[in-house]
Amino acid sequence: MVKTANDTRQRLVAATADMIRRRGLNATSVRELAKFANTPLGSTYHYFPGGKTQMVQEAIEWTQQSISGFLQKVFAEDPVQGLDDFLARWRVRLLQDEFNAGCPLLAVVMEEPANDDAKAGIQAASEAFRHWQATLAAMLMRHGLVEQEARSLAILSISALEGSIILCRAEKSLAPLDTVALELRALFIQKFPKP
Image (cartoon, rainbow, N blue to C red; front, side, top):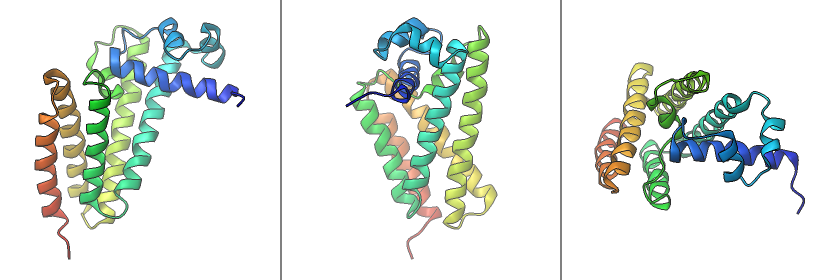
């Protein structure tokens, strides 16, 4: 199978997101990204003339699009099942990574904005978080919640999930995620009772 230029570029974007979620933004360098993605260093500058700043922004955008698409898919039919599926995805991810990686958006916003890479990354992450909230709220409105209630539940859900990921990584345990899942599921069952 012949690899295309688009494959290399996409591999670099995915590797950027993965490295950020593992090491954080400041510990992610273009040179290390090229090694991590198993691509020549020159490829990074060819596909990303804006350097690390461009790579970070595109990695955040890629993550945002991936999660937004997943939210639309799993919440389309049943919000309680959608919540279960979304939390299960994170459960698998945490176990696969042995609690050594979290969310790239969170990794970006948690670091001090020491340079333009960090500032651009924080802006991109902020927009991505807003997009996730809007996507989830729209899906919850499709299932009958009014706009303000849907927005509040979306913010609560995403905030609780992101917080539980931090605790899971710190404790090397799924217990925080399981607790959040239990509480959010009870709330979703209350908001979306079966007919």
